Image 1 (cartoon, rainbow, N blue to C red):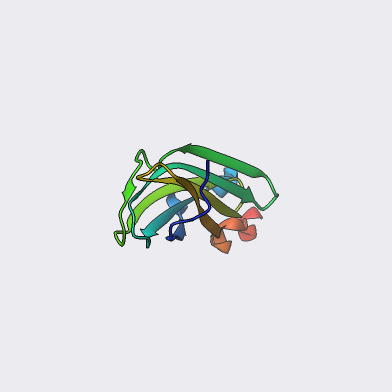
Image 2: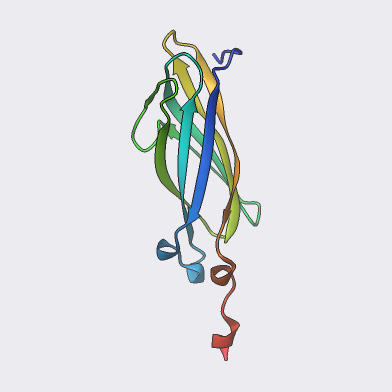
Length: 135
């Protein structure tokens, strides 16, 4: 059951296009993203699960959910930011990603912590074919 009295937890994102793992010729665009979770409340919470919604330029939606992040269910202590890096892939050079984490306090109350929507954008030079080489 989700509790209405939410702890103050701030999530920031920093996506970065990964050219060396991407291949526009086969519609493979890869991004890394750094997530920082800062617990600004007075109590310790534990991250239990994650949910991601990725949307590419065509409107195709991919939903990802699972236990923890990068193999961990970290304890988020007050004013001790937790940062991790992960990756995602789309078939288009642009898209969006958003989601939430479910965290639990030491009493057992569970809360959803939103991850605001962020853009995934490949450099235009990789998104567009080089037409000069087509002749």
